[in-house]
Image (tube, rainbow, N blue to C red; front, side, top):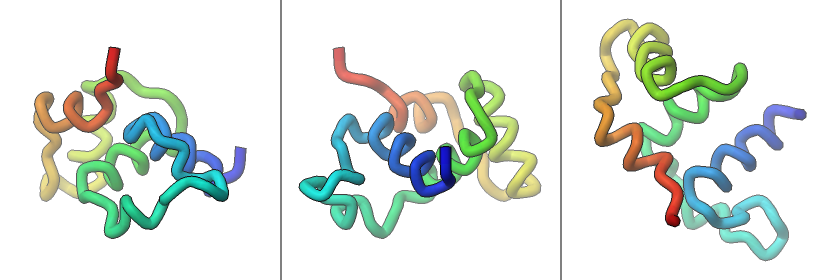
Length: 80
């Protein structure tokens, strides 16, 4: 999977909308929210559990950005 496809997949998962199709409205998500950017960056290398994502973001930003559980899980929730 190419990086652009991973980003489209991550946006699809986060938003439950196909933002990468021709009919999709990817521009509606720009500018990208900071937490979405960091979550997608953490997932670019592969699947991770929530704690792993939070630690990846914390380490990658040298402690400047901390995703708290409500922020993380609120960003990746799926409607059921």
